[in-house]
Image 1 (spheres, rainbow, N blue to C red):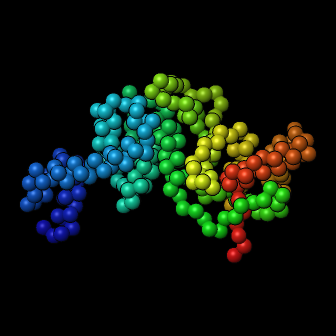
Image 2 (cartoon, helix red, strand yellow; image 1 turned 180 degrees about the horizontal axis):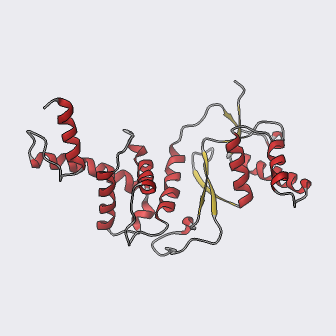
Image 3 (tube, rainbow, N blue to C red; image 1 turned 120 degrees about the vertical axis):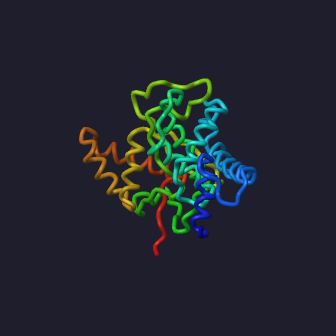
Length: 249
């Protein structure tokens, strides 16, 4: 057996001990290897989703991580990205059990965003926008900010509060890292969420572009009201570092 086949047999057994033992390896030795690998994965996932984990019994949580460990083909060798792979597993492959909460995927994504924003690298090309220059400089959403929308009020979920039905209205958030490297959760109204989505999709736009889009999208509102309201909104977002401008290259 060549090295590649030996290596594959080693990995197959670590992921699922129902596979044959690799040639020349004892059960005791492979059990140690497998426990080390599984505990690492379990530790990273559990640390990234503390609220979700708290809603499960120890056995049910271990079963979930075991299924992820055995069946999902992780693409990253970076441990800190394991939580993102776990989200992908829940979204694309996992078949919920009867005891899984209906908000499982949304809560997991909400918790993952905090970890992601806390570790994302700064973009040295970003620059703070002075409030007086909001109408003049090109606008971008910072790499340290993400907008998300959920059907459940995930920000309140705990052992003592577990909704069984989605809310009538969506819950929008911007998760961002401030100048002190603290991760913050800002609940957004629908209009602010739409404006941030427009800026993000545009990659780079100006205040005039945002205002033109708003006037077209909300013809029932006076352009002057939209202009003043949008300006105030963008100034507040700039103060928090959620929107920025890019340095000229």
